[in-house]
Image 1 (cartoon, rainbow, N blue to C red):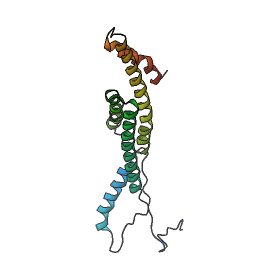
Image 2: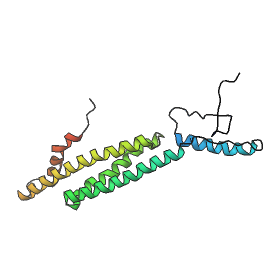
Image 3: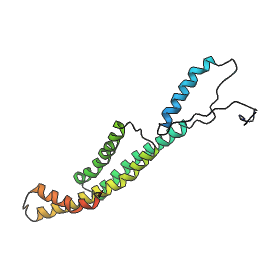
Image 4: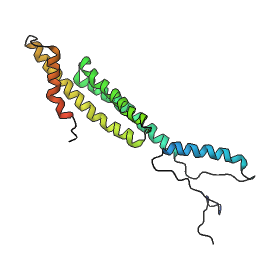
Length: 180
């Protein structure tokens, strides 16, 4: 007894199949594996029979990730320029500018070792976190710059490194996360 009907582009009845992906798998890897397997099967199909993919989301995934990567790169460049303009002191601006790519790199290291690939969610999270990173870095650098300026005006009393460390401690606790 027939239980369903599949139609392909209004050409009439056609057999259909669905690829089911396991939970936690990388969609793009699964799609590429299925495409390779279909290419292997193609020569063994009867003459005139072909497998026609109807819904292939690999292009959507690649375009979305490409768009996010380009926006992330643009965000890093724009934020770096804004930092340079507002701090107007190149040595001070280098700290937040270097913080961005280093922290992004550090975010990808655990993902790599855990076998987790980047996806739209992870790239979006990184894009959002850039704002937090830059905010903290700018506040810390501005405070250190101001404290060092005062230290110089007061005749350089005390250790440079101690002044810098105290300046970071003064504002650093506002940007740390507590897990208790």
